[in-house]
Image 1 (cartoon, rainbow, N blue to C red):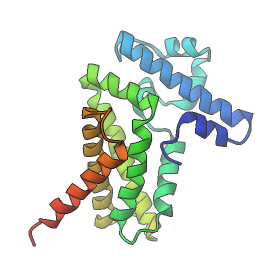
Image 2: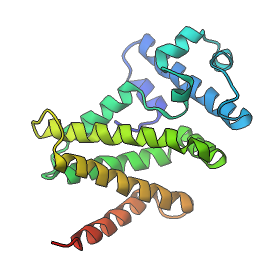
Image 3: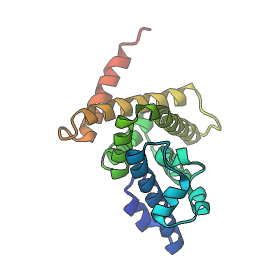
Image 4: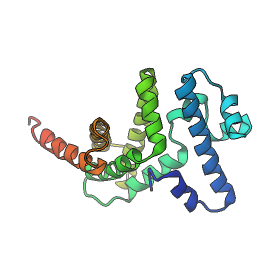
Length: 207
């Protein structure tokens, strides 16, 4: 399932080689986040990350295309899982399918230590927001494409793009609300409240 904890994904992997890949990727990202937090996001090298994890730089580039990517980017497997979740939804409307999937993603992210590390890094280094925004656009495009495929289309129509953008907006507002009081209401309830507010807001659109 999308957003699952790394240990869960590792348990589902078939074979030692796949489990090792998941562990290595997780270790590289954790090492990069720690160095970015303590040294600054541009002050460390790929070689230093690899030394922390005891792997060769070639191994790093088997997992990530660049140093920038290690901090925030989703890997292909995660994006594929997201798309599969969207394609499997049976809701009548694209927006219903998208919001259901991103509700689960919201819960998964807010319980992920990696995600919390990323949020801490963003708080101390706001100049990194364009990088996380790029990730958000990639996720939105993935959702839109998967909605189109769910409906038997090759490319997203306006309804698919609007559904993906709307669901992403609900998730972003819900995450911001949850971050304002992490000890308060569960993320799922916050998401539900934001979704209800979105329904009311869109119902007020002029004809």
